[in-house]
Image (tube, rainbow, N blue to C red; front, side):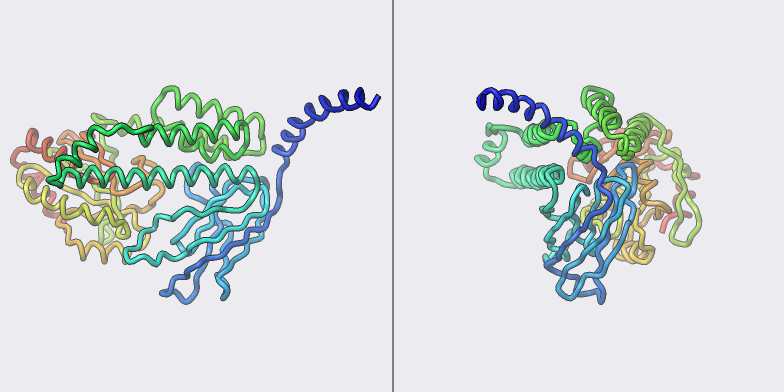
Length: 411
C-alpha cells in the first residue's frame, strides 16, 4: 500500500509545481529593503548622495528617493511600491546598479571613479536578490563584457593598421574565431531568455530587442510584450514599453538617409533661439555632444580640420549640447573654441528621443536640400573619410546669403 500511495502522490506534486511557480510570479510585492555600500566616495563633495530611480522603460527614470552615504560608506532605502519592477541605484552620479524589486536586495559598489582618467561607465555590480533578479545580473554582465570586448577588438584592428608588422595585420584579417562577438552576445542573451521564459523580469531585455526595423526581431519582441501584458496585468511598464517601441520605429523612419532633417530651435549661449533651417543650400554637420563626454571632445579637433578645409566651399557645422549644466557647457565651449553655431538642448531627453540616439557623439550630415545624407554614431577615421568624400563630390562655393547667415550665428 505504501508504494501505491507514493505513486499516486508523485504526479500530484509534479502538477502542483508549475501552479506554485505561476502563483509566485503573479504575487505583487509591496515593499522591500535596499541596502548597499560604496568603496570610494567623491572627495570633492562634502556630502555624497545615492539616488533610487524607477525605470519606466519608456523614457527618463523617475527619482524615488535619495539618501546621504553614511560615515561607514553604507546606505539603505525602504522601498514601497504598487508592484515590483526595475530600479536603478545611482551612486553619486558615478556608479550604477539595476535590480528587480520582488525581494530585498544588497549591493557593494565601487562608487567614485578613482582612475586617473575618469569615465562614467560603470563596471559590473552584482546585486544580491531574488532568482528573478539574477536575470538582470547576468544580462548586465553579458552586455558589459560585450562592450569591453568590442573596444578590445576595435583597438586591435586600429593599431594593426598603424603597425608595420604585416604578420599581425594578416593574423587579424585571417584568424578564425569560434564565435564572432555579435553572435556570441546573441547566444548568451537568447539562452537567458529561454531560461527565464515568461518571467516578468524579462521586460528588462525586451526593451533592447526590438530595434527600429520591422522584421523577425521586432515581431518577436512585440509578441513577448503581448504575452507579459496578458500574464501580468499589473506590469504597466509592458504597455508603456510597447508604445515607446512603436514611437521609436516611426521616428527612425523619419531619420533615414534622404529624409528631411527635423526643424528644431534651441537656445544659443546668449539665450536667443536659433535653428538649422538657416543652412539650407549648404552641407551641414550637426554634432550632438556634451561637455562631460570624452569621445565628443576628442572628435572636435578632427571636425575643426574638416571645417577649415571646406567652410569656403559650402560647408557648415552646428553643435547641439545635451548638457544639463549651463556653466559646464559654456566652460567647455571656451576651452574647445569651436568657430561655429553652438546650441543647448532645452530638454535632453526629448532631444535624444527625437533624434534617436543614446550615445554621443552622434552626428548627422545634412545635404544642401535639408535632407539627411548620413548619420554617424561616434566619429571614427572612417566617418571622417565618409564626410570628406561626400563634400568633395558635392560642395561648391558657399552662396553669399548662406555665408552671411553663418557669420552672424557663429561663435
